Image (cartoon, rainbow, N blue to C red):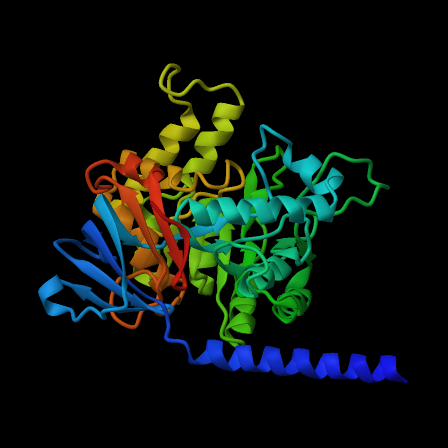
Length: 429
């Protein structure tokens, strides 16, 4: 009896202590920082002589020191010779994949356990954040079911560090079009995405993925299922339009993997938000994209990496036809005025090396300032991420600093010295 009484009193004491501490912490003022870089890229332009005031998880002010009243309790963080930017937004990632020169895509889907793939994804999320990518649009787990939903929740709960996530869950493919392939016909092989057949089934699958936690619906408008293994359209325009309408009923958008002109055309006419890849686009299809306000996520770095895995010695060997074609289509998209979102298909290459895509965007003809906009304010607008992608009052305090000036040297984006997400500092000089 005495033992139970003591235990009861101990529990009451612990509860009172916890409640008191919770009350005290809730009344403490939010942490305040004054960031003093050499220059600030605010999501649109570069400003010099600016400081940025952060309180809690929000930006309170940004501008000339004389125009900002700095609280006496603020912690000053000097960032000399550095550029402060909004946290970068990755438009096409696969946190559950790792480079194909380490393990083939088939073997990742068929031989790696979900536990291993999730463990890898946790590491990838941390590397991504520390590389200055504070938000990712993760477009499919490639066989890892809805584990991206759980990863996103673990980050949101503060269990693990990582970027903000928009997740697509399993992604959707037309029955018979996707992989892994090459097995005997009597063997049932797990697929890297969820199959759908016909309009009714496609609507069911879209609704199912939304119900499981997908923020965005991804469909494969074409894939390598032609008679000679070439890319050909999969879903019809009517089917794609139904997917778009179904997703829109829940406030979500649909994005499409598409590399053929016909696959792109069907997706664009159906109301797709972004085209992923667009390798074989032409001036006519890019003109249609611009007219319909459909953005392009070119994923330049993925093809560049895959060809190097296959033996291309970049800088020494002649450029493969695939690279030449990609440069041409990217140039045509720019000339047509298509909105370009930054996304490299990272996972094909190493997580944490995301800005490799930005370097190639500049190399292929995009102005450095436009590349920075693409990875910040443009991605935020296209992905409907309010209060992200810009440095201005009331926006969320997702901020990074890099050595040097990325408008003059894109390689400076690899030199991340400061990372803040939601007002929490993850890396500091």
